[in-house]
Amino acid sequence: MALALRPWLFRQWKRWQRLSPLTARILAVNSLPLALLLISILYFSGYQDTLIRNELDSMRKEAHQFAAALGEGAVILSEDERDLLSPELAQKMARRLAETADQPRAAMRTRLFDIRGSQISDSLSLPGRRSSIQREELPPLDRFSALRKIWQDFLRWWRARSFTQAYPPYQENPDPSSQDYPVVEKALDGDAAGQVWLLPNGRLLLGMAVPIQRYKSVLGAVLMTKSGDKIAATVNDVNMDILQLFLLTLVLTILLSSYLARTLAQPLRALAQAAKMLDTEKMGSPAWKVPIPDFSKRGDEIGDLSTALRAMVQALGQRLHSIESFAADVAHEIKNPLTSMHSAVETALRISDPERQKQLLRVMADDVRRLDRLISDISQASRLEGELSRTPANRIRLQELLSTVAELYESHDAGSAPHAPVMLEGAVPNVMLLGVESRLGQVFRNLIDNALSFTPLDGQVRLAARVENGRVHITISDQGPGIPENKKEAIFERFYSERPSGEKFGQHSGLGLSIARQIVQAHQGRLWVENIYSPAGAARGACFHVELPKVEM
Image (cartoon, rainbow, N blue to C red):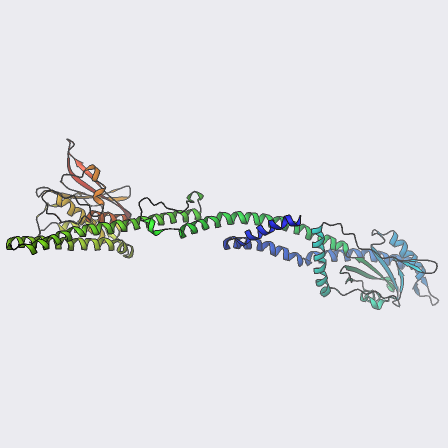
């Protein structure tokens, strides 16, 4: 049996060693109140003191009855007409009274002392012809289980330590007198007194002494003693019930704590391990999947943490993929003008025609301007997200923002190319937005510039705003050829450029609409495009929609 139990204990010990710190803390915190309850049993003295007082009161009443009977029936007159306690009568009456008492004869010991303090009777001594027979009460049999016996022995040892400080030791002389018992001395002085002694075996002995009186004259004293085993048994039963309740509660606490720890520690451990195993090299791949476990169905804080981690990791993966694709696109876009410049330089070195050389120099100048514009837009796009996260959001009045943007296109500069007029249609709602004013202005300028590039000079670009379902809806409409249905999302990709026919190549970097959507999304909004159709069903322009949340005035 022991050999078979040893591997199981070893496995349980190894399993306990693998407990997470969170599980150990949960078990410790939930078990601490139970440990305090168990410790309180060792200091369970209030209930025991109450039992001792009640028992002494009961002994006091019985001792007074003994003393009253002896004061009436065991008193004789001396030669000088004084009342004296007769030892012979007192012994007989004490034995008879002890036999008819409510307590069993062996449970209560009754001793009589005369006025001089000498012991004249003891209920444990049976008189014989030549000597007396001494009786002694044996301790009760231990009929306990192994656990109960261990617990009882431990409590007996603990109480023996505490009783040593609380109660005086009991010593019985072969020839006892009242001087051996201070309570008897008090009784001979006319006062009833009780005392609790500690026996050598660690058990308690309760004693009560009362005076034997006749007409208020003290003739002797009665000392009744009784073992405290009944009180100890009562306290032990209560303590045993508490111990059993403690063990049952401890088992339930461990089971419930283990369940609680498992529902907390295991998901957290799974999330931590998944976070450690993240491979940033694979996160940029389009086929990469989020490895974070999904606990969103739990409906608690761990579920919220799982959702937040999954969203964060997914955003990080998209960000890494975006950075990789952005770097590839930048390299591709920069390589085109560099290739053109390299070809023009090599050609210019081989030819001697001045006109051809000037033409090639103009090509290189256009490529340089294209590179400059491209690098500026790339730098702006790369700084945009960090700038939006660092710049504090302010309250922006929509009327002032759109009016300022429209005014920028009312007058033409001397060297600027002519364009169609920009019209602000209708009354702009008097609402407030929350965001970065310069960046929102950039969104509308990019969209208007894109609309002007597709709108003929005799046409117009219309700018309008309204409030729908608690959100601000701004539209920028042009009169161009519209957007192909399969390109409505592609136009918002980086470096995508589909320009009107006749426009000089390289005038746009293809980042304007991508930057505009990025800014709108950073402001918790949406940006999309729809075509404007004529009654005949032909496209007669494109309309860009910007939807932003409004705030209270």
